[in-house]
Length: 96
Image (cartoon, rainbow, N blue to C red; front, side):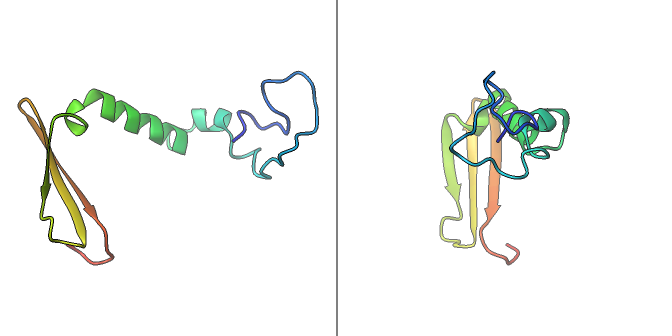
């Protein structure tokens, strides 16, 4: 992904021909535009990282798999100190 909507790398002064072709959508998909858009993939990823850093219960300590026999869903709990969270992912197109 390009940093800006330019056809040359952002970190060079020389305008040289790159050996790797640039994706033709670099003018509309680049980091400079995504930084400004609160709903961009870049800012979505930033929110996920912040969520993980702010909530250690999501990554640390006790993990318990629930309903391990269900092939259509992945459900688990995480516990840290007095905090508890549950995660659920549906793996098939059916409702669980």
